[in-house]
Length: 261
Ligand SMILES: N[C@@H]1[C@@H](O)[C@H](O)[C@@H](COP(=O)(O)O)O[C@@H]1O
Image (tube, rainbow, N blue to C red; front, side, top):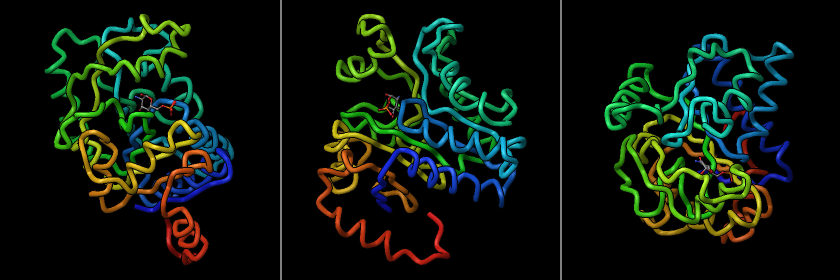
């Protein structure tokens, strides 16, 4: 796991966009894993600028979302498919038909989860997966206690996650759905490169556990320690509990020019 401590969201956005641009330079039809939440926004903004400037194109790309609320009506602004439309699809040149998410409105939710796993596999798997992290260490919506071998399935959100996300629902926790469909930890681990972003002190404990704690379903993001290619972009607040922060800084400063993230 490579931990890079950045000075600003814009710097994280540049490094994340560099990785995506390098991917599309060598593989125009690459599959991008996209995440909701505030953490990846700087990457989407930077990527959008580069697409508008003609430096990179996602015309042939496929994209797969991590998760979706169950039961939010199709035109609800906080439905993740609609959020992704605003923050990502509208900024780049991807074909909207190539952007996929689990169907939180399906009558048969279990079948929708199986269909989603199959669609990811049929597309050849995810090349680069963007991730955020919850204050309780969740990735996508894999809450504490999630099986580290899990695949896409229905999950019940914790009280903490519903409170964290109430800000998107008029600060009314009762309006936050109780259930979601989410890629499992094993689904996420199947992606070839994971790029996780986190900012602010509220994420510091989760980031410390993820990078330096024992692997445990109590902190689902700790599973990433078993992945061979993970890049973590954290600001000073999110890095504030890292025991090896000085070492991560020295490593990044000494990184050979030729080595991509
Ligand atoms: N399902 C999403 C996660 O994918 C995201 O990582 C998390 C953190 O969001 P933020 O980046 O806004 O802190 O929020 C939600 O729970």
